[in-house]
Amino acid sequence: MPKQVGPPDGQPDPERHIMAMQKQTLLERRYSMLGLLLIAPTVLVFCAVIVYPLISAIYLSLFKIFTPTLEGTWVGLDNYRELLTKGEFWTSLRTNLIWTVGTLSLQIIFGVGMALVLHQNIWFRSLARSLILFPYFISTVVAVLVWKWLFNDLYGILNHFMMSAGLIEFPIDYLGTMPNAMISVILVGAWKYFPFVVIAVLARLQSIPDQLYEAARIDGAGPIARFFDVTLPQLREVLVVIILLRAIWDFKEFDLIFLLTGGGPVTSTQTLPLVVYKEAFSLNQMGMAAAYAVIMMLIMLVFMLLYMRRTRTEGS
Amino acid sequence: MVRKIAFNLFAWSIVLVVAFPLFWMLVTSVKPQFELFRRPPTVLPETWTFEHYWKLLSETNFLGYFWNSVILSTTTTIVVVAIATLGSYSLVRFRYRGRESLAFLVLFTYLLPSVVLILPLYLMLVQLGLSNTITSLVIAYTTFALPYALWLLRSFMAGIPEDLESAALVDGASRLGAFWDVILPQLLPGIISTALFTFILSWNEYLYALVLVNSDEARPLTTGVMNMLISSFNIEWSLLMAASVMMSVPLIVVFAFLQSYLTRGFGAGGVKG
Image 1 (cartoon, helix red, strand yellow):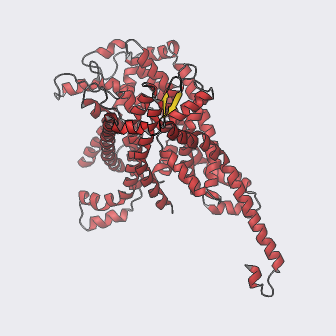
Image 2 (cartoon, chains in turn brown, blue):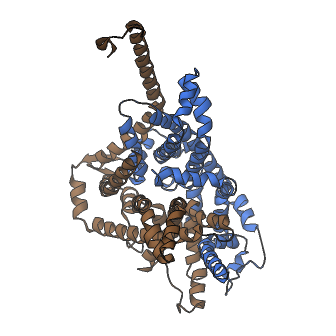
Image 3 (tube, helix red, strand yellow):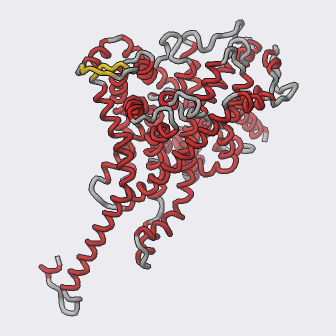
C-alpha cells in the first residue's frame, strides 16, 4: 500500500495516488457491475427454463402423478424403489448401452477412416466433404423417412441390392425383427453422426506438422507405421474428447430410435429416453417418468463430469 | 499415377455410398407413383414429374408447417444469439464472483438430456396456458439452444485479442462503445456461424414439438411431416420424399453459400471446448 511505504521525493503526492487508486477500483467496480448487467438476461433465462425445471424434475420424481389430470400424491422414494426392482429399467439400460457402444464405435472407425481419406488430395475434395457432411445436418425426421423407404420390405432398394448381389434369397424385414432392428438402428445412427467425427478429426489432421511425417519417412517408416507412430498419437487428445461428447449425445438420443422403430419390435430397441417418454405420455405416469429421467441423468453424469474436467484443464 | 486413380475411385465410391440415401430421396421425389413399384427399380426416373411437389404444396398443410418452422427457428435464433452475445462477452471479459460456476453451469446444461427437462417444462407451459403455441416452443428451444450458443460464442470471444479492446479504452471509448465498435465486428463471423447452428438445431428439433404442440396451427415441419406419414392410409413415398427434400432446402442453401461458417463453428464448438 502506498501509505505505508511512503512516496520518495519527486513522486506524485500520496493524495493524488490514492485518488487514482480509488478511481481505479471505482472503475473496476463499475466494470463488474456492467459485467453482471450483461449476464443478467442469461441468468434469468437459465433460472426460468433450466435450473427451475431441473429441480422440479427431481421433485416430481417423488410423486405419483397421473398425466392427464396432473394430480399427484407424495410417494417419497417409492418410484425409485419400484424402478430399480423392475426388469424394464435394467433391460432398457442394457439396450441403451448396446446402442451407444455399437453406434459410437462405428462412428469412430468410419469417421477416422473417412477423415484420413478426405485429408488426401482427392478430386473435387470440397464437394466430397460437403456430401459427407450432409447427413449430420439434415433433420432426423428426414433421415428416418429416407431410411424407412430404403428399408421398405417390398419396394426398398436395399433388399433389391442385397438380392441381386446374391447375399440374401428373400427380402429382409429390417426393422420388425431382432436382431435386425438393433443393427439397422445402429447403422443409421452411425451414418447420421459419423460426419461429426470426420470434421473434428480432419481439423486436427491439418494441424499436424509435416516435419513429423518427414522425419518418420527418413527413418524408413511405411504408411502404416506412420499412421500408428505419428498420426494416432497426435489424434489421441481430440479422440478422447470426441468419444466423450458423442457417448453423451448417443446415450441420450431419442428422435432417431423413436422414429425408426418406436422401441420395437416389442421393447427390443427401447432405450431409456424412450422409456421416459412412454411412462409420461403413454402410460401417464409422470412421476415414474421423472424418476427414470433423473436416474438416466445420474448415469450420464459420469461422462459429463469427465468431459467437463477435460475441457477445464484444456482451457487453463 | 495408377495408384492415384485407384485411390480416387476408392475414395469417391465411399463418398457416393454415404450420399446414396440422399440421392435416392431426390430421385424418388421426381418419379411418378407407378414407377416406384417397378422391378427392377429404375435408377434414374424414366419420366420426370413434379406432381408430388405440387400436391404437397396444394393439397397438404406443408406450407403451414413450413411457415411455422420459419417463424419458430428465426425467433429462437434471434432471441438466443442476442442473449448469448451479451452473456459470452460478460463471461469472457469481466471479473465478478460466480463467473466460473456460471461457465460450469453452461457446459453442464449443454450436455443435459432434454428428456429430463421436458416433463417439468410441459407442466410449466400447460400451467401458463401456453401449450399448443409457437411461443411455448421458442421457450422450450432456448433450453438447448442458449447453452449451445453461449458455449460456441464463448470460444469465439476468447479468440479476439484483448489488446484491441484495451486500445479502444485508452482512446477514451466507454466499455459498451468498445464492445459495439471493436468486439462486435470482430465477432461477426462467430455470430453468423452460431446463428446458423442455432437455426439448424431449431429447424430439426423433434421431441419438444411432439410433446408441446398438438395442433396444426403451431406444428413445425418435423412433427407435421411425421404426422403425414402416420395419418395417411397408404403411404405415398414419393410425396414423403418430396417433403423431405423441401424440408432440407434451407440446409442446402446454407451448404451452398455459407459452408465455411459451418466448419468454423465445428472447430469452435464442442470439440475444441
